[in-house]
Image (cartoon, rainbow, N blue to C red; front, side):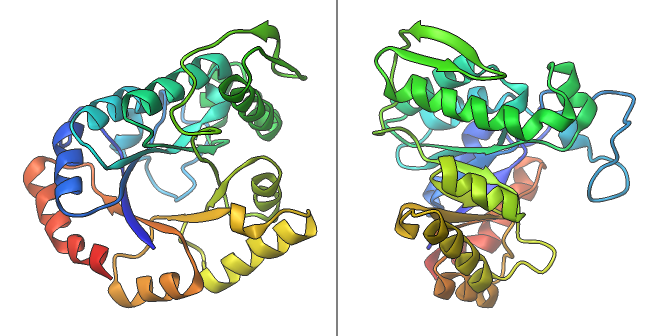
Length: 279
């Protein structure tokens, strides 16, 4: 089981280049960065976790720019979006961004996606909240077409373009892993239909054995080999005993939190959780 991290890269926290170097030096497998393009000031949509929205949500760097800097500062660290809010991104531009980072990093990119929760945020990008999952599906399929077809085209309700040339293609073949975030049965069906892995959060009674069983059952019901699908658990507990149960259940990757703080505070956290990479 791989042990990686997730982090909100902000303008007030540790420099993402230094963080990436320190993670690689301590044996972490990956760095996944969170994103919000912006936060509408009206705050109509309540924060799903309750209370005030944390400062980090409105201060994140662009994930592709941040991961480009992290890639240039490292050699082996895997680099992921955790998650990319696909309904808020143009699919042609996103395909180009991911392929570029994957090429320049030597094939180290992991593309984890999600639909998002902030209605007015996605509305500012022209996506209706009610359509977010349909938009995500079409854009994900269009991105995959751009990565894998020499003359890509896509015709759907929300994405529509005739044959185009787009290069570079990703370094990884056929393309970087595409993971989908969420915990519902609907999410799992989407994972099986058009993704390479599931990206659930370790919350609300998450149990690794039952999670593996749910994904396996859905894959088999759809005629897909479960071995072609991975599970990456976001915000896994930083506890050796708990992670042992994840490993035994067959979870492929866990992501531990790195806080949005300055260098000294982050270094203390990394030193504390680094032994968990050796389990």
